[in-house]
Image (cartoon, rainbow, N blue to C red; front, side):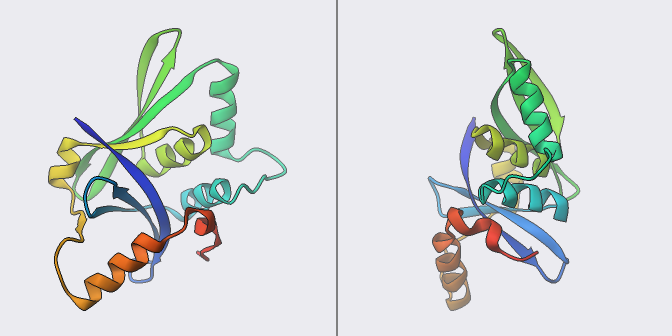
Amino acid sequence: MEVALILKGIIFDTIANSPVVILKDPNADRYLPIWIGIFEAQAIALKLDNIVTPRPMTHDLLNNLLKDLSINVEKVVICDIKDNTYYAQIHLVKDDKKYIIDSRPSDAIALAVRCDCKIYANDEIMEKAKFFDMSSEGEELEQLKKWLEELDPEVLGKYKM
């Protein structure tokens, strides 16, 4: 079974010196952080801010190619984690035939925001991954929980990376 996740935001981890995409399980009080590259974070933020570049960026090019070939991006799935590395799949449909393409989660998410398709995590990820469980108590946890809940998708790209 898969759980649809909501893209809550992109934050910058100053310790790892890396952007982190934050996905939320809408049916539970838990978050999935995935550390991504700066270019993928920028690609996601550009689309969320509706910034059009003079020439298509890589994920825009891929989206345009798929559209021109009448290939529908059905969904993206965060499907596995091995040695703290997440894996994803892009689910495509062409003429009622389904295709599953291996992908990095960051590229899958960058494509998903362009295709306006849902992002999922499968049960295996839900069990294996170290989700931020926000159901426990504590002042720091409450502050983080409040901040994550108040992340506005309209301003995601406005965070400096």
